[in-house]
Image (cartoon, rainbow, N blue to C red):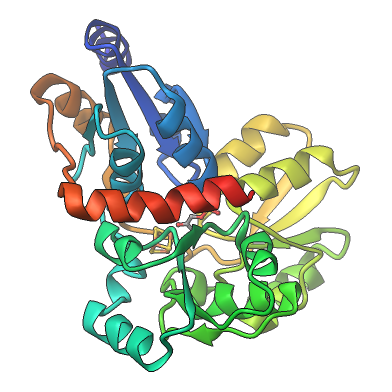
Length: 299
Ligand code: 13P
Ligand code: SF4
């Protein structure tokens, strides 16, 4: 029996579901029951009737699944798969910011720890940040942690926000010069950019959207060539869903090392040994869930 068959057999026996983010290794995406962006995966985690969720992604995503589905066992195949941006929020600093702006609403990007979500009023993802901010028009807003998404979405929504100095080191590897060079090589290609990129990169895009938004855009477009400004894992579903189209990464070094830590072997061990179980203390979970529920209710 090959490793894929072993995973599928054990998954059935354990009544487990495998969720994988769009940046996972191709073979991990291919074994998953559902793939998607952070928003879609949160929804799936809330809906599924499986007993176990094996989350192939980074830690905050598995934590989000646990917050929304506390009665389920949530497993992450590699517990060291973190998100450097999520770890950039210093709770003390955030509490200080809240104290300085007591009337402000705290909007936290879903790329945050459960503890930071618990200190927030509402969450957002790259797919709905603009919509969430539009709903808060007229209010003072603190946006954590991604300064690039915060800048882009607030500009689009026509609101002012207090930004936190966080960022994704992987998306910061994608520079305007890279896009310009690719544009020279592929003049007909449409440029699709993730809003975690620098504002000057977003400004020269034909479309700025989440990973699943990119998949929808490419599928629905009559164009045949696309320059993709995000983590290179997305090239796999793009190509799989659109074999007749060509996709060029804006930067070949935009690789999230944490997203690549999950391998098929680790998925199998995770199902065999029920490891690594993700837990969120109840007091934190309840508060964090309010912020996630508010997001799911708004959009
Ligand atoms: P998406 O929600 O667009 O999939 O983004 C998640 C992420 O971690 C981007 O770096
Ligand atoms: Fe975090 Fe960036 Fe990796 Fe996404 S790509 S998980 S934001 S480090």
